Image 1 (cartoon, helix red, strand yellow):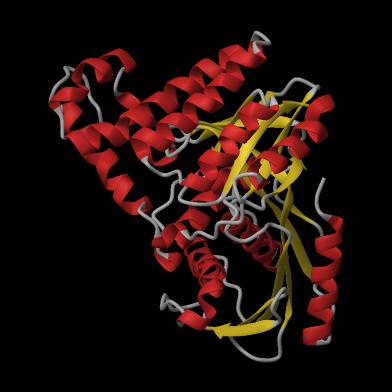
Image 2 (tube, one colour):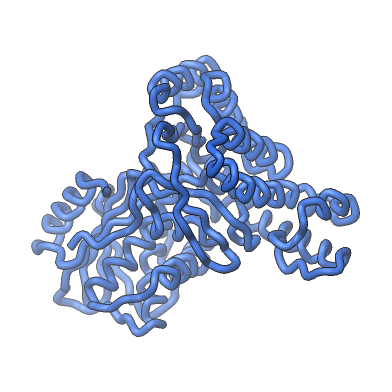
Length: 388
């Protein structure tokens, strides 16, 4: 499943701007993070799913060297040389996600130059649904198709992450890129960021997710994201000195050992690590709960996740807290912020039969708190693919 409307529009815009049809067309979805907040760069595990919104990327041959790139929604075109690693000026900051992918593909012998490109997406910008990773992955898939080359999916995810780290300035983990690549229809993706293994986990047929967007714009590169990562690394290093086994990342500390030792390390690092260590525990226990059909207990993990986001990691905000409490009051099985935080959206787990009623109730309760959110029913969807 992919967003056929956005693919159709992207191809039409490409033909309008460049006067020729695209010869390579790809699509990559956004994602919701279900459990495992900020665990990816701590070598942990996550639950996520690709969603029924994404980015389409189109390529055709140009009559001039370099790459021309048009953002289909704003009809602006940037030009760049894919062989240098200079970031583009602020006016074209959106193009850096794409430029990085073309640059790093060259390290794998994939040299794409002299092309015209267009992208268009249906993911709301700043909603915490990983529009940037979807764009990076769609770029890589289209470029590989155009060049007639192949790379394994993990490598595509890693080079897309590298692009975001070095060209967009956000020191993100691999969760977003892997979610976009490995998505499955009506299932979660369980990803292990130490082994880089992923496998699908089936969801019960009678549940769906709601995505509630209070429309708080955010950009992780401008947020405390990078500072939180440093705190996690500090916590792991200090814990490593207190136990008789190797703790190279927060993934390695035993849950009971962390509880006993957190008072002996830097207080701020311990506070941040409380959320991450708890998330890794919740993901692994969540696998068992889903296998046993214990959906209410799994949903409670989402509420627990948001609570430590709010109190320990401090990556929530008033608006997201209001939405989560509205979801609880409306009868959702669970709800939490989804993504890096400091803005973005809330994901809620509900029975399919109750989805519309709960959706309406959440919006009503939020309006009583002076918020004007939008909400959509999210369909866990297939990952990135070549359309043409």
